[in-house]
Image (cartoon, rainbow, N blue to C red; front, top):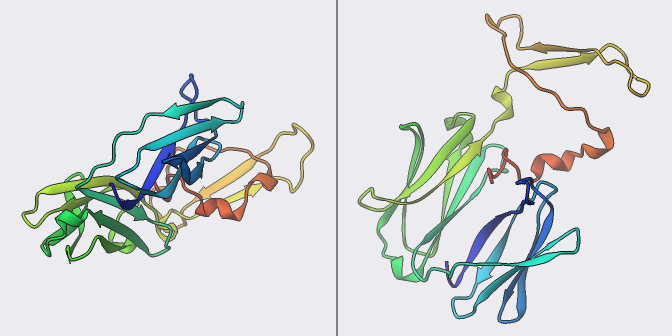
Length: 231
């Protein structure tokens, strides 16, 4: 959206369709507006102000020292954008940005739904260019929901999927190992207990990954991924 701050997401892949790390440089009229560095899977996002009177160029640089120019569609002069922040433990925030010509003091609605079932409906007046909706996570199921913005006539304007997550309603689990330390390539026996004794059915299809502990950092929980942003 021209002449507004936009949140732009990026996904970089190689010729095999696998994600690769990259750095994107946003350039307007020869000046760098923003720099976006993706994670190892090639996903990332950043806020950038788009000047409607200047051409936007994006240059992608890769770890093998190659670089390409990315074709960018012209920013829209009129319209809406939506940016979602789900990092908060209890709420999901949806910010709607409106172009100046559409600020009309009419109602605008946020409907959160999945497979035809609504979970939340909120209403605000379009009396400024940035509107903020707040959704209580306790009202939403775990998994993917759709955030739809509707005008005063309940006609859809814009929407996006959001992954909702609450740790307190996940099934309880207990993981234990047969030993505290192991030699290289030694067999590891893992016992996994799901739920508790009050659960009548405890059947699941599970998968596991083994990583070095030094690679698992607490900050990883706050990085952009399907838990937070659903790229």
